[in-house]
Amino acid sequence: MKFNIQSKKFLAHLNAVSKVINNKNAYAILDNFLFELEGDRLVVTGSDMESRLTTTIEVSDAEGSGKFAIDVKRMLSLLKELPDTAMTFDINNETLEVNIKYVSGQYSIVALNGEEYPLKSQSATETFQFSLSPKDIVEGINNTIFAVGTEEMRPTFMGVFIDIKPDAIFFVASDSHKLVRYKKLNVEPNIERSFILPTKPASILSSILDKNENTPVTITVDETSATFENGEYSLSCRFINGRYPNYNSVIPENNPYAMQCDRLTLLTALRRVSVFASSGGLVKIQLEKDALMLSVQDLDHSTSAEETIVCEYDGEPMTIGFKCGDVIELLNNLACDSVMLKLLDPARAGIFVPTEQKPGEDLLVLQMPMML
Image (tube, rainbow, N blue to C red; front, side):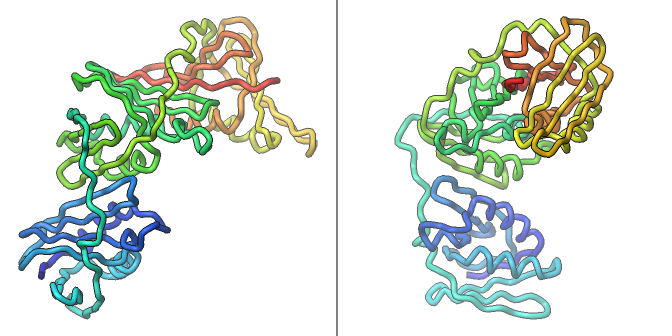
């Protein structure tokens, strides 16, 4: 086998595939990239057994065909040190010795047999297929993934729940203290399915898809897994087993008291007062007419802080407590100029929403209060 390829182009694709590969793997072969030469196309695969990412790269002056595997760290380390240059790979099909040449040097390595690499599992159940734009997928993941849980005792919370309706898609994430629901309205999947996408493949999808790309992503779903395909990449992953809670049932239908303020003003004020907060991070939000006061204290270190900012509020005076870090995180992830906080009483969840929703979107963040 033989082929030529540009080093920086090669590195960009290998960097993307490496995201799916674990630092430590149960099988040594998974420490390697699988390369498959087919005509003028080089197919590169990485896997951690739960997820599998494949990319296709056009090569030149290709000869022969076959499979071989090369260590991930060694391959990436070499490419990162090379200038943007043409490279020639010459592989002996019998000994699997790989000679890598470029204008100023050459390198030699013995590859592993590509036939030892685990095959992609085939679905034994009925599959469903639909398409979404990269923009819809990336925005759905980016607006929710920050709220995904990390407790292994609650595995169903360790991923983004994708609830597909015939005329809309809901992206949902929760760690039981906060919940994000992002509704995409301008889509028509024409099927009704739902699944929990684990955090790792969700993050990979967000990183490899270009939301400015017009080519739709084809999504194939069966009972246990999904495959996301666009022109250059194909990502297959298994779902998290379990039934996701009824997220709509925990979202209050009527929080009559609404506070509206500039998002960055509130965010920066919270960052300042959080410096003086206790380890639990409680921040009190006291609402008066057209004014919001933030207050924190740390009795162990004899520190406290207060800040007042201007807002729009004409409801009943109210004081509610939240975990400061959670509110900072959600404000960081709300891409809007002005934010609205909807409340019922200090013991019920608060709802944070953009004051103006983007066309075709409906985003809200539910945050549970802390005891004052």
